Length: 496
Image 1 (tube, one colour):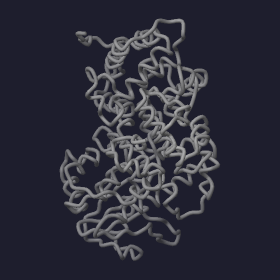
Image 2 (cartoon, rainbow, N blue to C red; image 1 turned 180 degrees about the horizontal axis):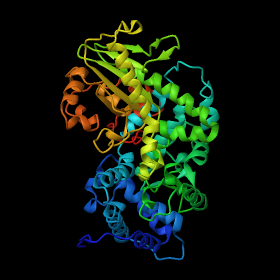
Image 3 (spheres, rainbow, N blue to C red; image 1 turned 90 degrees about the vertical axis):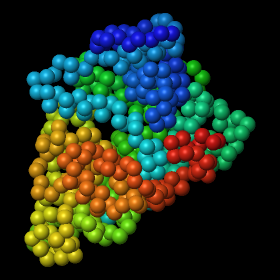
Image 4 (spheres, rainbow, N blue to C red; image 1 turned 60 degrees about the vertical axis):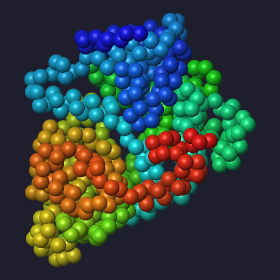
């Protein structure tokens, strides 16, 4: 077929109507099969016309589940390609919002990043971090919820088995065209699976945490809606991120977007599951663990001294969470267990206040600590006052473009360079072996352009060793021997 994308922006209602032209029971299996075919990392770049992106497939599945009905036409691969092409040409607020070009561009980039970058986090790190942080890190404060047995209570099994089940569901969905057949657990050759995790446990955990149906999905989709603006509809939360498997569309369970299965067992996925069950106390516990986990990662830095927060003054005030002393500089690390909210994903009028609420104090804390070190305050005597000082704000999830000139002026000014980075970037930073980390950060800060990029840009091209903390987390999962035969980009359990 000769394919030439149109040149005019597609109206949202026309796109929705195109999806609704087809029965969900016909379209959704096509979406699931395509997602399985282009499931790993950036394999969608090899798809026809580069249209089979996970975010486009996820939105087509969402519209079909939320708006489709069975009294419609059948669907073909050509129909799916046309739908995905329409998605890639959807009209956007950026086309009309040019009263302030800089602000319009910032809003566009926030929405695009929230839409696309969530599918591009390395699965190995996301899953390994779950055990490394939640079961292998000791918090410095008494837990409210994350006490022994919390995982059995919340997840219905151990964290190790929960992540293992996610790995298994992902691997089987990819290898079987986007479907998981529960009967396959009793088939010949599945003994190795049942020897690791009993089939009833796999099925009960999957049903409780991973599975939805059309009626429940539609209710969840209605609750997720925050705006009536049709231009923003596709940027809202997709309930498939909460329940990535759907029943009622053929044999077994359907995975419309395979990439969303392992995300359910990431720290972020477990965060939402825990908060729904335990409330804010779970979030506070996770925040305490996250701070300690960042300290473990910093401890991997060679030739560096890591100090915990320092108490000073009569009021027992606290410095930043961690102070890292290297030969080249002093790194002040403030930990924020925050993630971009819907207001940032939609880039609405509340986005600036939300950004300041979540990150503003961290900038102030870094600047305050830097001033205390420079003044020679006695409590900071172990920290050299003569070396350059840099600040690092480590977040649980990436805040895209936050270091860029479009975002940075919205946050407090500081007397020392400050970079926001995700925990994934920190996990990569601490494993560099061919250059001192201090020198890398100094060179980056000295470059007016590169200092506004995401930290990961400065880490590319360097030699790395494996991250021992993540390796220990990964080794705690049931499929680690099978997974050892796979590349890090392949789904663990795929060898089963």
